[in-house]
Image (cartoon, rainbow, N blue to C red; front, side, top):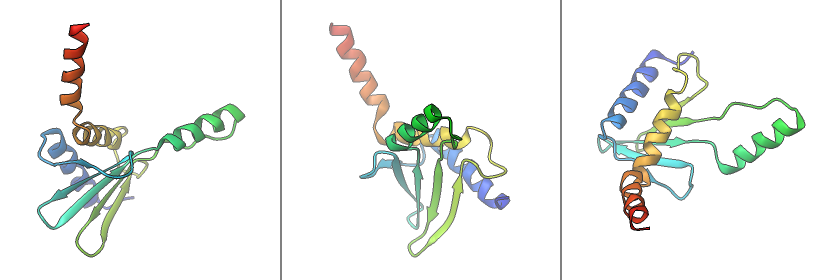
Amino acid sequence: MVDEKIIKFFEGVLSKTRDGKIPWGPTAQESNFIAAIGGQFSLSISGPTEFDSMFTTVQALVGSSVPGQRYVLILRDMSSTIATLTDSEEGMRPGAMRELYERARWQAVHGGEKINRAIEVLQTL
């Protein structure tokens, strides 16, 4: 079981991300996003990669057990990793980590702006 403080922290991160108060940005890895908070902490969230999805599909085709998708949130300060939380931790609400990942991704890739541009282009067709 994960410490209740870590779950409370996660819920705060999710809430602040929903409100647009955490500035998520992209990294060199397509399935990883980062944010700085308070000038002394950083967050990173990672989701399944394209390779993970292909591996899961192959496992399903050959009939072996298929692990769940993994989402990981890491809190760091200037010198160390403070906490690591995965979507499969006891005490995590089902789907909450995926929601955080998708909201961070959407913000980091400027999804809202890009979909607006795509709508404009579609209207000109």
